[in-house]
Each structure stands twice: as C-alpha cells, then as structure tokens.
Image 1 (cartoon, helix red, strand yellow):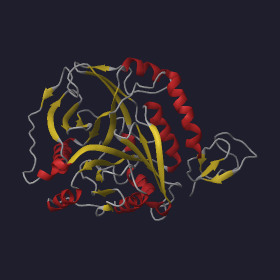
Image 2 (cartoon, rainbow, N blue to C red):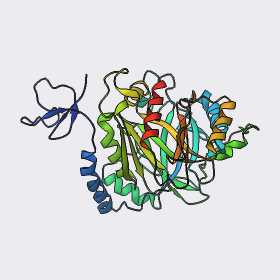
Image 3 (tube, rainbow, N blue to C red):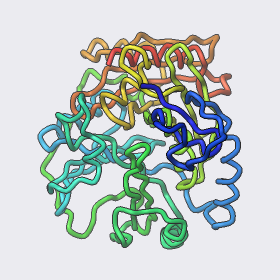
Image 4 (cartoon, rainbow, N blue to C red):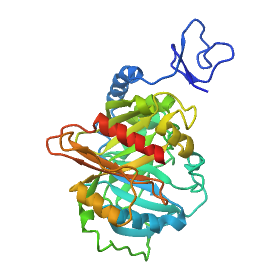
Amino acid sequence: MGKLICSRCKQVFEQPSDGRCPQCYAEGHEIYDFKNSDEVLKREIPRVLEQRRKAGLEGLVEGLEAVIINTEPDRQRAAVEELLHTTGFQCVDAFEDAHYRSCVLQAGGSADFVIRSRKEESNPFAPFNRFPRSEHLPDTRLETLVFATPDIERYVTIQKEQGVQFLTEEILHADSFSTIQTAPSRYTGNSIGFAEWHGPRRCYRTHDSRPLDWRFEKKTSKESLDNISALDHAATRVRAEDRDAAILEFMELTNYHFDFAIYVKLFNSITNVARLSAQDFAMVFTSGISSYVSDETSGPTEKFIHNYGTRVHHMAFRTENIEDTISSLRDDGQAFLIDLVGSPQEGLKQTFTTASQHTLLVNEYIYRYGDFDGFFTRSNVTLLTGATGKQ
C-alpha cells in the first residue's frame, strides 16, 4: 500500500479509516498521495540555520575525524584485511579494552576508520540490523560518524538543552580525547559522535586499552592502492517519508548545510548532498521519491531499505589514475556492480563494488577531473542508482 501525506501537518501515514489525519486529526484539509519534493526543506532549512546560530552551535562542529564500523567478532580481521586490500589505508593500531576490540586504519588527508567488534551483548544499534538480508550479521553496520569539536562540554550542554539524546549521560574522558555520541537516529540508524583532542590527535586508546597481537600486511601486488586515498563521502539510505527529517536532523547536530538534490524518477530515487565545505567529507542521503510498495515497483533505493534497513550503503574514496586502479582491483578478484561511468567531458568517473560480506558496505571509487567544479552529475547518479538494484 502507498503512503499519504496531510497538507496541514505534512504527516505521512497509511490510508485513514475516517478520512482524518492521525497526527493533527484535522478535517477540511487535502490529503495527497505522498511524494517527496524540496518544498519542506526549503522552508525548514532557514529555521534550522537560525536555531543553530541562536543556540551558539555555529563553529562547534568541525570536519569528520573517524568512521566507526562494527563487525561480528569472527569477521573483524577479514573486514580489516578487505579494506587494506581495496584502499590506500594502513592499519596503524590494534587494541582492546573492556568493551571492544579495535583496529585503526589511516590514510593521508582522510578521516580514519575504526573497525571494531563488541565484547558484550548489549548493542543499541541492533534494532536497525534486523532485516531480511542483514539479520545474519546482527552486530554489523557502519555505526558512527565522529566529528571534531573545539569545546565538547559546551556542545553537549547546548544540545541537551535542545533535547538531543546521547548514548551516555556523561562525556568519556581519555588521555588524548574527550568523546560522546548520540543515540542512533530513528531516521538513519546512524550515531553522530564528537571528539575534542587533548593529546596526540587521533589516538583512540583509553586508559584500560591493551595492545592486540594482530599484524596486517598489504598485498605486494597492490602498488596501485596508493591511488585510493581520502574518504570523499558516505551515502545513507533513508525511507522516503523520513528524507527531510534525516537531513534536518543531521544539520541540527553538525555545522553542515544542505547543498542540492538530484531526482532520478526512473528509479524512484533522490540523492541529497550535505556539505561543510567543498573540500570536506560530504554526507549523502538517498531516499525514494515515494514510499516502498514492493521490491518490483519501488526502485532500488527503497528496495535496499526494505531488505537491509536504513544504513550507510557505500563509502566513496577519491581515486587517482582510476582506470588502471580499477583494472588492478579486478585482477585481484574484486567484483563490481557496474563498470566505470562518466568521462573527462562530463567531469568525473565513478564505480561501485559489490557489497562486502563482512561489513555489508559497498566501496565507491571516484575521480573528478581538474576543471570539474561540481560534486555529481545526473547521468552518473542515474547509472549508479540503477546498479544498486543488483544487490
């Protein structure tokens, strides 16, 4: 069954039995078939920006510092090896504490990856992982995006006054950093973390951390991996009816701005981009234009959510010499959802790998030519969106 939307409160809901909106109970207002547009965003974004300014949040959230990916304990090492063999990242630390086993991967000019596994049963992200094609990996997902802050105490105080819920009541203080993260979003399943550094930057150990005797080596045939460097963006799949709320929530928690949206009507999909600056990591939200009805009719974006839940679908890496680099990855056994799309004339080239069996994440490799001043092109977005229907 399709979804409806109330013209008064914009609540999205199933067919009402009495003709009234179940949210505002208003009569005399039109009820339409639900389809996304930019109308709500255009109205709400100025309000969010003004609210951020008045609250004193401007300048309190900087760029992305780290991405936390949780895996099943028996797949953690394989997940680390997979990233090492498909990117230019290096494993610089491996340790454990009372709660996690963690491996830290770094590359110049990029946010870090912290690949970890839980040592306890409690998992606040578990409800977001119980879907037909993800429930076999109940603790696996990209869970948290960690951003730098110059004043974590002030940030947390302000956001608690705004009603933001955090996973812990108090900020965690370690020798090198102080950190806290939000409860998983009801719209994305993602948590947003914040870190203020006091000592060596990007040292993630706490006072009770112990080194792990884990060693990882790059494949000697992968010199081309040096071409795969910084994390460019990550793309989260959100339900059509939650698209606006997910973007606005992210803006409320960070200093990011909504940049643009590309509508792909052919595949019932919208790609939305939020950015801090043209040079920083970008956050992408992809949703349906209209809500899920069936795998056959709703398009690959809503189909993915129906089967995997709301989650980060792919991580995009900036890639030099992209043709030869992709050829090298193929030679080493990496499978792809689509061949390279784009051209020098269009300004960029991109491709998607098949999803990892250990993290459920797709890698995107992207190269923008020097005179290209955009972020995506409509043609590439259309082709890549269609390719995800193979998952």
